[in-house]
Image (cartoon, rainbow, N blue to C red; front, side, top):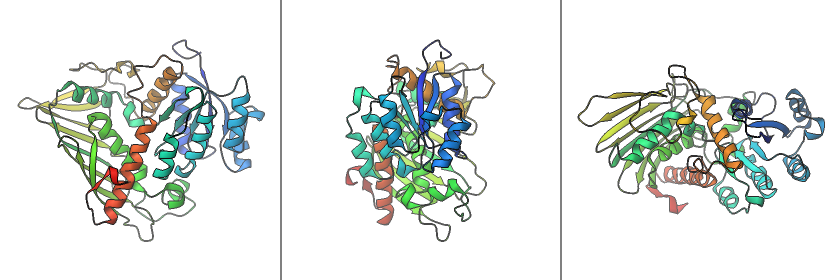
Length: 383
């Protein structure tokens, strides 16, 4: 049983075998609140790695698969088959498994970006899921309690009419050229596996989704300047993007994987005509909120706050004990479990959806198109 006494959901995984960082993260997230049991997997396209990885995770021999197609067919036919599947493969291997499992009536938890091409994203949006199967896109930063609080503050009108949104996500781990021996870097810098965007697809989509989630603003157009600073690199490793939102608000987004001295420096600043807020992912249990003409207020996770968040139950431990990346991931998993059980109606608006994934691909493609045209303003409707 789950921590709350609810029945655990039978989970499968595609990708995420031995040595795969993001698969490890998803498995931890699924376990934190006790909502899932991992019972099946197609953990690698290489049969020997799939078998070894499945054995290491304690999966039954007959539920270790060497292809997602076989897994979808077999698990859908079992009376004790998986109810949800986590897809944690490189971008180009999201569409096929997501389509197969949705059509088999199995709920899908998919890493971002949703696909490697906008055509695949739109095709996936046209799939008719069997038995009402649901889809979750793991933009995990939306699971932080203070990000939820920021969203509530904006929605409440505490910031007034939003004027300026600034979001950035700098890293430095791709400052130098890398080879195939660095598996995490190799597929992210390969257009065949990553898609049209490098840095913009890997972390720029996180920054964009965070800004959209907190503010609720709809994007009209982007003006983008994408660069590949490392010689020979085929995809962007630094992006500067201006955004125009419906209603007149303006935005700025910077994402970089060659910004020496930065690790995972995701941060968001939102300014309206009544107030502003500032939040950083590397210190996520604190957020600055300022009403115009008044002193800055430091809001803390689980502390006294102006507007009670709809998701206050996501605070797992007392104030002063830090919660972070893994717990935010777990929030998405646990709330999706509630949706699967038919108990999570209040959560659905908070969970990143297939539609968010399609919009993320529009953001990538509009930005690529803009950059190819000397940063010409490009509307989402043009891609």
